[in-house]
Length: 374
Ligand SMILES: C[S@@+](CC[C@H](N)C(=O)[O-])C[C@H]1O[C@@H](n2cnc3c(N)ncnc32)[C@H](O)[C@@H]1O
Image (cartoon, rainbow, N blue to C red; front, side, top):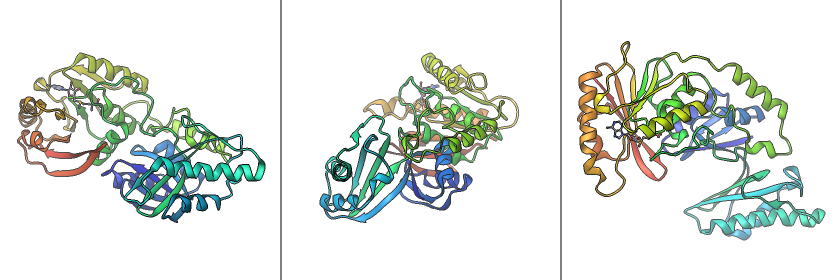
């Protein structure tokens, strides 16, 4: 199968490494995702294990298109009875970039019509549309004049792990959080602390990584479960095998703190929902009062507020200066990682970064800055 896993821009190489670890073949990082090949086991493992992917697509048609009529004709060349019956529900999602076809909803509609018209012509009945939880979800991607039609094996976005029902202010997406952790190179060998932890996402994702706990372990539904060829025995085997490999205790300290007591409450609730509430300690504390735990140095991974709204930026200058002073004075030997969308505020930390990585948080260009504290 020809497969493509999508991710946030900047995480492509990390995702490619994740794919190599699950035995994917012909892995090639692209823009906003990674191309790869694999069998059904690789497809299931990708959905179960990938921490940085948003969805995993099975490519079934790649064609040059000038118009939605071209698209309709090409989609009709596929024998859709191979993928579904009239009793199945379907949905077509479409994204378009730099193309003469500009109307993504209309393009999606033409694909749906091509499929349904084929069923009506052959058997007099057609699948119905379910945009919420279709049994067969299709993804149409049009870039310039190339259209790629894929089966969406994930369904709901893979970043929705299910442990974070409560949203605090500006939580970071779970897949991006996992990507930041992997980019630091941390693998559970030294302490990891987030002293501005908000809802605890960075700590929870770190704990899952250190425990070798796959992000999809307790998820109820993946897109491929609605397909005609869904192999329940294979999926159950892969999931149970993964479950047996999950460690019960952390190999190192993982902890979070935040100045807001409501954030600590949310972080604790989320950690419990993620099954690691007893392993990660969250404390209400101003970063100005932060002291690292005794023992070997580790990493501080922080996503400070970066003031997207007018006027907020100036107010956040003292916070960033305090952070810089605290780590310089109290954390020699530690490595600080700051994920921010504000270069001006990052400079207020007052330490020269040893590494700068460009990323995106949704549409906001951001950076992961590494500071080695002497
Ligand atoms: C962008 S949010 C972090 C979001 C977090 N990564 C998550 O996934 O929910 C920034 C956090 O910094 C916290 N914060 C702001 N000033 C602080 C301070 N002086 N000390 C500790 N935490 C602070 C805020 O309460 C907020 O939760």
